[in-house]
Length: 358
Image (cartoon, rainbow, N blue to C red; front, side, top):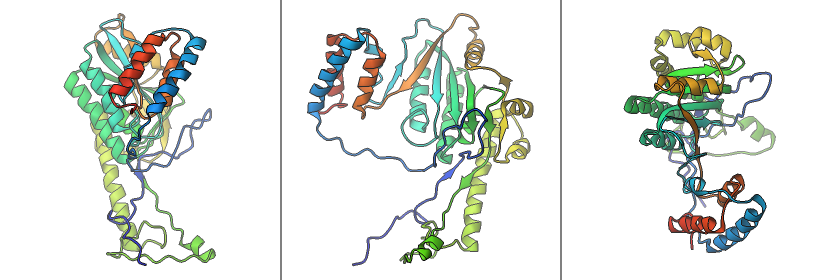
C-alpha cells in the first residue's frame, strides 16, 4: 500500500538553521550546547487529572511539615505560564534581571521569543521596574528565534525608554549575541566566549551507511529537490548552491542586526563575522562588548542609566510552566513558610484557571 505523502514543507524536513556556536568553550567549563531545531513543540490536549489535586495536596502538606511556613503568594502567581518575582520589589526603583541560559529556541522559556517577551512585558508594565539586565549564558540556537528575541529587546528599549544592560557569563555567542547586541551596554568577563557571528545549516547524508547496511530508500516526490534534506542521497550541485545562498542571506540579517545594535558599520561587523568567538578582553577592544565586569556591575550600571545610581532594588523575573505539577512542589520547597490555608488557596486557583483539571 502506498505510504502517505511526507512533509509538505518545501524541500522536505527542514534542516536546522541556526546561529549556534559549536566552537571550543573557555577552558574552565563547557557551555551547554544542543542541536537547534526550528520546531515548535505542541502541547497535547490536557487530560482530566482531578486526582492529582488530592495527591499534590497530600504531598504538599508533608512538605509543609518539613520545610516550615513562608508566604507562597508571589511564587504561585508565576504558575500558569506567567511571570513571577523571586521577591516582591520593595522600592519604586527596581532593576529586573532576566536569565537567558540555554539554547535559543521555541520552548516557552526565557530562552524563547514568547518567554522573553512575556518577561519584558512585565518589566514594561510595572512602573517600579526602571531597567532590565539580561544575564546571558548561551551558545546560540535557532536563527529565527534569535531574530525575534533581538527585535523584542529593541522594541522594549524604544517603547519604554527603560535601559537594557547585558551581563555575559561563560558564553554569549551566535543567536544569544544577536539578542545581546540590541542592549544599551554589554558587560563581559575577560574569559567569556563572546561573538561567533555566523550561520550554519547541517545536512546529513546517510546514503553511504544505508548502502553498507543493505538498506535502500525510494522517495516519491512532487519535485526533484523535495527529498534533498532526507539524507537518503547526496545533494546536487544546484541544491548545495541553493542552500548556501539561504545561509548567506540569513547571515546578512544577523550582521545587519548587530551593526544596528552596536552602532557599527556593516563592513566592521562583517570583518568580525568569522563564526568564531572572541574572549571578552578582545570583544571590548573590537567593539562587540563595552566593558569587563560582573553581574553586579551590570545591575549597578543599569540603575545608573535609569537615573538611580544608589537607591535601587533588584528582582529576578522568572518563568514557570502550568503543565508541570512538579513546579508547584518546587515552589513549595523553595519557600520556607507555607500554611495549609495558603496551599489550599493556591490549589483552588490552579483548578479555577485550568492549570489542574477536575
